[in-house]
Image (cartoon, rainbow, N blue to C red; front, side, top):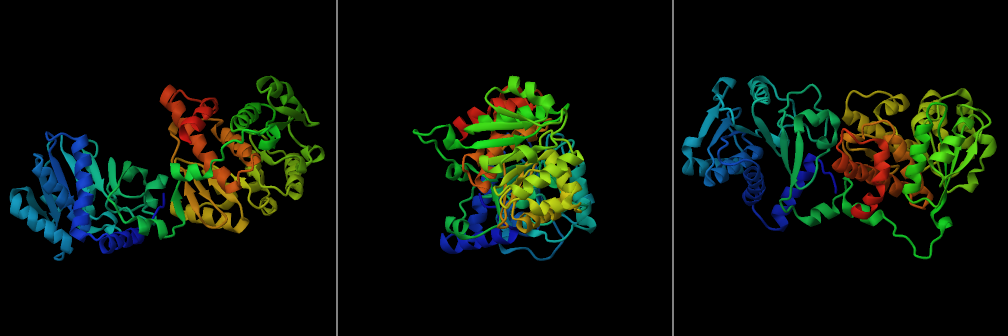
Length: 505
């Protein structure tokens, strides 16, 4: 699914109006009708509705919603914020319609004091600005927003299109923004919905289809995309009935150290469950029995050191392996850094680099420029900051993420609720599977194993990153559905990976 900017969404509206054809008022009716249907599905007529409308098209949506709900027997009060003498044409059209049919439902708001007291079970609808606000909300309008937010603990707040004050494509940190419980938006996600800093404003986001013209959506380029089943179907490679274990590659995992062998075991199990043909694990001597007993399907090479992997550059012929994953539980010994440098100097294939291997890159930043092109780096936010520096907000961090992927010609998978996969060509894919139950130790090690296993099976680095993140999250969703988010562990993600293949692809 493409993620369009606010300007592109306006272009999509205009294109639909010109080519469907449909009038702008009819398109507004269509969008508001979807919102009214959602509200009717979730709230019975016994709930009084209080709609706050601006003077633009977002306010026009609110006026149509008010009329449609009044037609269906709801008690609706609609306040028009008087911040301008001018109103959009569609706003004025629907205001006149509401005045003719339900004049008693309307009132003017010129100051916070004009907002009536709300009954205990009221639903608040924010239709003030939507994407029509390109600057921070100030003055008495900011007072209105603060007043509405002050009702959040007592009333449900539903934002139409976007919470008022939230910028679609820029950071809204330290700005005045409606804090909605639900956001009803149209046709596709906006970038703002995918950034953790905006979660207090958007609440739960619901994307409502309104029939924007498919030609615009298909042919308009965008650098941001949201992974969906259609993308996954195009990536997935069905198995050849005449295949053998060599068909699906030989992977190497360099992982584990004294006290951290669990990370290596989780990563190995995930790699095998992801479908790799052969797996060899390189571990310190202390990990030999642990690995052989925990995962007999994997082969094992041990380092000379009892506690750490310091000498893998002496033992590994990189040409032997289709894919190499390194980092889970590895530790950051100076000897390990030297071995990593030698590996990077001699490996021509894309690698999966995670955890302590990323930490070593941040300590020795010149090693970043030795990482093979097409490699997949999987930092969490703190690891990313150590690698590339801090940013003032998440929009800036996203831009830095993309810049570094292009500069280094690697794939950087920044882990989070909507993990962002930045590609060397500048595109960024957001993954939409996963849940808070996956915020547990070992979850990242599982992802490293999955990515390494897919890479060994001749998935391209881009395909491996997108499919691997999606499978990892979907397996986590299946685990949470059966075990609860609280009770699940990283091992449960592996346990449900098979079902993720069966049900998700």
